Length: 175
Image (cartoon, rainbow, N blue to C red; front, side, top):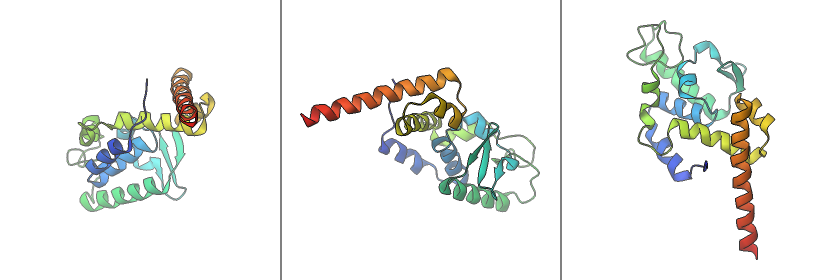
């Protein structure tokens, strides 16, 4: 049974994100529920700053204030660090700046290794949170995150169970 992350777990991962790249990566997983491979495949053209949109795995998503600021910070860092790079991937590093290759999934996920709130757990937690806040609506989950029917159903079921447990605990404590 999926359980939501607790604030301390998320806080430790946030504290571990000490560079512009890792802060952006963390937000992409925790806010936009992006998978590591999706993050690695993001291109500069996927970031439409003027319209505050980010296209992840072919789905345009609105950019919230936090992700927008982290994206701007990363782009400024990238421009200063590698001013002449021809690499069109959004996230690059020392190994990829002089190539046209994407950064590896290993590099992207490395800063969160050893944390309870890994990028994958943050992604899952975001989807579970959406199901709990908006209600266990399969269509909503599928639309927001591009989930297939079985996956959306699984999140909706977990959210329904957690919401029922919370209601039972509230009822028991009120008696």
